Image (tube, rainbow, N blue to C red; front, side, top):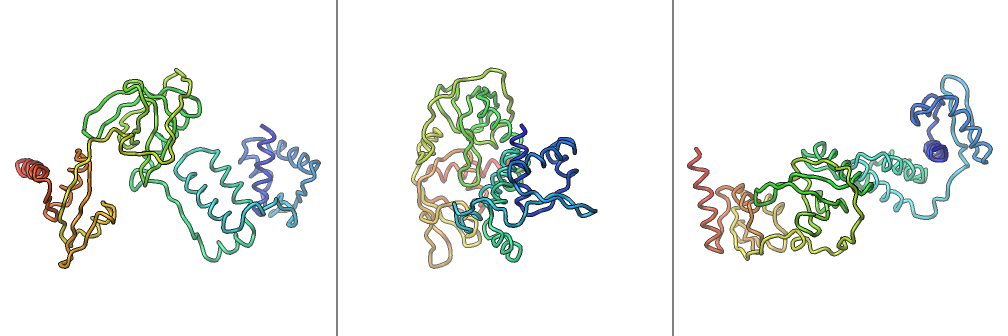
Length: 310
């Protein structure tokens, strides 16, 4: 639409960069003649676009022309910019990149100069370690399903290791910690469920649409119970000092007690599923399950299976 293109041109020019007609034509996928007409339209609308000739020529908005930036302080604009950058890096959606350009244009000139001197103060990188590129197509497809209310068919691996085919009505994409989840109405289970994106093994959109349902409120969501996790079990574990850094990565600080010899004791309730047993086994000889005894026996059994494999 022409109005979208005109607004986009104004936002780019507010960024204090000079753009020539060819660059703008390529950016908005129109002809150079169309850009000339757009510049005339902006001039008639009272926007002071200056035209410069020569090799370094192009269009720019006069220095004294600004949008109202008093809606937020410079610090607030920079925080908003950092958040939008993070979203744009995770979601391959042109809308977020356009929003990034608009927010960037509203950042006061003094803040731009400070950024050039000091660099980023706040960075949100929402891509997972090693799996950012793998997740992007899933995120894009699911975002399309949510926007267009399209049914999605997926093959999903549960935490217990079982695979199943599901038809779902996507409702929301959620990042919890550093992990992406899909909240969707599962037709098989007849209710809303959470699906971890890394466990979606295959994904496709159907032509069938759906009427959006009233989904559970995301704020204050009791994540574990909504996922249908198994009953959590109180546990007591002892870790050697060599894995201290990993213990703090894996468990909440309130669960951890440092002992006089440098070792750590972890006390808390956990869902004893395949994922959790795998986590404990990854600590090798540096962890010992003290309670409950049956969980210690299960770790022993799994370790013996590994020994027999070799």
